[in-house]
Amino acid sequence: MKSLVILCITNYTLLEEFPSGLENLVSLEELNFSMCKKLKYFPKGFRSLTCLKKLYMWECEALEEFSSGLENLVLLEELNFSKCKKLKNLSEGFGRVTCLKRLIVKKYEALEEFLSGLENLVSLEELDFSMFKKLKYFPKGFESLTYLKKLNM
Image (cartoon, rainbow, N blue to C red):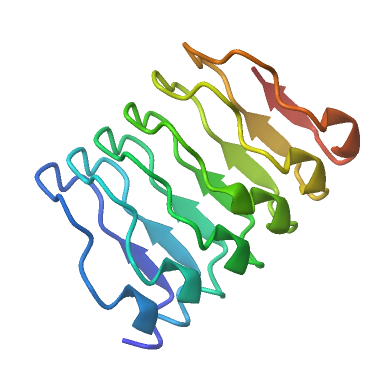
C-alpha cells in the first residue's frame, strides 16, 4: 500500500485507536479520519507522511492530544480538525507548515490558547477559529498573513 494516495476512515464511531502501519503510507496525500468519535490519540507514524497535502479530523470528540510531527508535513495545504471537544493542547509545529492555505479549527470547548506560530503561515488564505468557548487571547501574528482572504472568528 505504499502507493496509496487517499485514505478515508470516517464515521467509525467506536474506533478508539488508529490502525498501525500509517508510517508505511509514504505516498499519502490526503488523510481523513473524521467522525471517529471515540478516537483518543493521534496516530503513530504521522511524522513520516511527508507527502500529505490534506488532513481532516473533525468531530473526533474524544481526541485528547494532537501529537508532534506536524512540522514534518511540509507540503500540507489544508487542515481541518474542528469539533474535537476534549482537545486541550495543539502541536507547536504549526509554524513550520508554511504551505498551509486553509486552516479550520472551530467549535472547541476545552482549548484555551490558540496555536503558536501563526505568523509563520505566510501562505494561509483561509482561517476559521470560530466558536472557542474558553479562548482567553486572540492569536498573535495576523499582520504576517498577507495572503489571507477569508477569516472567521
